[in-house]
Image 1 (cartoon, rainbow, N blue to C red):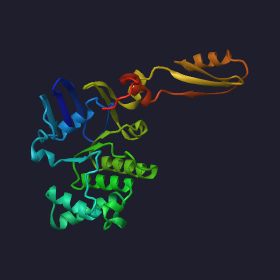
Image 2: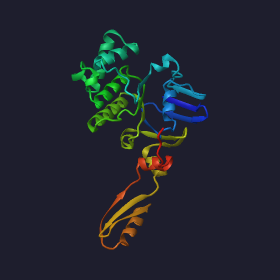
Image 3: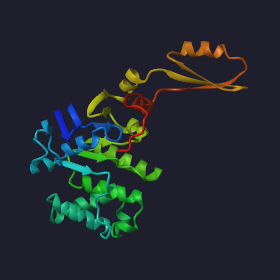
Length: 282
């Protein structure tokens, strides 16, 4: 559904994306991860047609490059920055965006009704957005992106700054969209969300793809050891182990063992191992 072939993009002396190739399959939810400044936003902007690559190609389905308006009609985007009008109601916002998509008349009204129902905003559809909570705004932002039922949906940090209930509702709606046949590119800094909903994950840094695969494959390849934490009367002792037998041998050597627990490698630990632990401010 989305094919990136040898993409390169520079801004002056900074190479933001460096010979990146990636294929996202029809019907999957693809998690796209990277620290600040890794090139993730540049890739998203090129995939949506906002930026053109210096070299390489981008193809959406069989429709061509996203720089063509006819191709973009198959694309939905929910940006991290909420792109709605505070003084308009939820329904008025969706009517406006629907008209931009080319919907009109009874079809426009039907799609607005469906989108409002889909994100559970129907009971507040006539309230101005400035009266909405952050989670409700995020749901309307999602509704605006799916109003025309796109084949490819790009979601950039769609749950940032929302409460747990709204986050869960948004994730459920995203999974519902996949069940409706939509292909989804999902960027997030919440690793547990990516583990929960994504079929495959790609991690990018310094403009290059570091790893690609299912969460299970990535953990198997890059997860390294398990951690065993043993509690004694003197406190806690930590062991890095690679198999259960090794863990049992380590525990047998600890006098006055009170209890122990194990911690498996997570996507977050793999992410930090691959991209480093230093702070990224931009």
